[in-house]
Length: 385
Image (cartoon, rainbow, N blue to C red):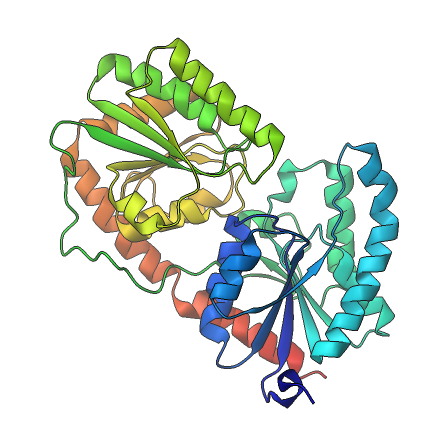
C-alpha cells in the first residue's frame, strides 16, 4: 500500500490551468501552504506547465492532464468537448487513486471537476474558485460558467466582493480573500523614502498580457516624464511562453525606442524575488483593465511601497483611496499621469501611504478572512463524506 493511502489527512486535489507561474497559482499555493498540517494537497496542472517545478520544490505532489481551453483556434474548439470528457474521466480516476473526496477548481472556466463529479455519482465534492472578473468576460461563456458553478459546485469561492456581485445571493457563494505573505525577508523598521536620492523609481510588475495595462502606463509615464525628468520606469514580468504576449512586449519596447527612452524605461523578465523588487521601487503601478483581486497590488501594500491602481474591480477593495494609495479611473491616462506626478513630488505622502497600506492589509486580510476561512470551508465539505 502506498504512502498516500496511509495518510490520516484528507486529500484535496487542486486543479489549476496555469501553464506558467501565475497570480492564480501563487494565490492558491499561499492558501494551501499553511493548511498542510490539516490536509494533503495534490496539484493537477496542464501538461508541461512551468509551475510544476515551483510546486515540487515546495514539496507538493503533481499530476498533469492535457487540458484544452476554449479559444478562437479551430483545433481547440474541435477538441474541447472530447478532451473535457476524457480529462474528467482521468480526474475521476486520479481522485480514486489518491483517495481524494474534494476537488478544488482554481478558476470557474475549468469544467473537468463537474465531469469527474458526475462520474463519481455525486460523491466527489467540488469547490469552484472564481479568479476572473466575470463581468469583463464574453457573457455567453461567463453566464454558462456561472450557471454550472451555481448548479454543480458545492461552494463557489469569490476572491472579492466585485466578483461576488456577479453571482446569485446564496450561502453557496462566499468571499474568501487571498492571503497576504506570511513573512518579510527584508524587514525595515521605517519605510525608507526617498529610496533613491536622484530618481523616483516606478515599478510595473505584471506578465506581458494585453489588458494588463502596460500600454496605459507607458503613455502616462511619458507625459509625466516630460514634466519630471527624474522619473524612471521598469516593467517586469513573463510572457508565459505565448507568442502574442512576446509580441505585446515587443510593441512596448518599440514605443520606448521610438521615443528615445531606452535608458529611462527598462524591461525585465519574470521576477523570482517579488519582495525585493517591490521594496527597491518608490511607487508601484497597476493599470490593468480588469482585475478580480490583484496579488501585485496586495504585495505592494504589504511590503510598504506606495501604490497607484486603476479602478477595475478588485483593487478598489485592497486599500483606501487617498489614505493608503491612489485609485484612478479605468483606462484614464490623464488621471494616471496626474497620480504619478502627485506621488513623485511628494515624499511625505509616499511615506504616509506606505505605512497606511501596510497597516490596512494586515488588518483586513488576516488569517481569519483568508486561508483559515478556506480551511473551515474544506472541513465542512469533507465532513459530509
